[in-house]
Image 1 (cartoon, rainbow, N blue to C red):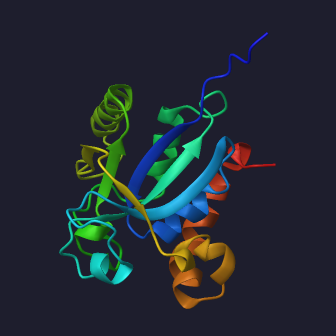
Image 2 (cartoon, rainbow, N blue to C red):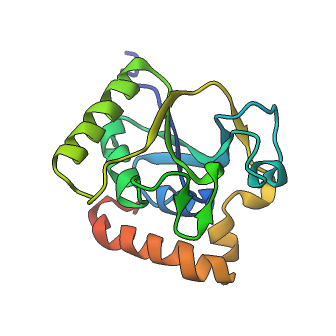
Length: 183
């Protein structure tokens, strides 16, 4: 008898600093791996310094590997929309520039359809005062960020940016999704 479980899927999402997104998705049940990186630009293998300069076209993103039998793509996107402001163009809080844009890099037509439907529903429900400006683009290339960016919050939780920006997002997520946390 063969295993009929669906294969793991990938989601590539940008919503400001990748440290914040990674710290949240690492704790979500059904997620098997999260890698911080860069996508959506025109420079091959960009460095953090190049991306931060804001002229490579890349966004800071996380690539999330998840088990669709435990976590649907739609549920993953609902968490994504709850942990950042999808109504601000090229900015999240004090992080400003195109590298901090809200973006979904879809991996299939089905992911694109789900993302478009959810955005339309959220806009119709007027969840935010302004409309969602999240970019939807097909994934073309993903470049993992430098090693020191991986698991950054877990390894640097006492750093000021982590204390004042990442930790409050993680706390909000943990409270809102207490029933969806990894064991």
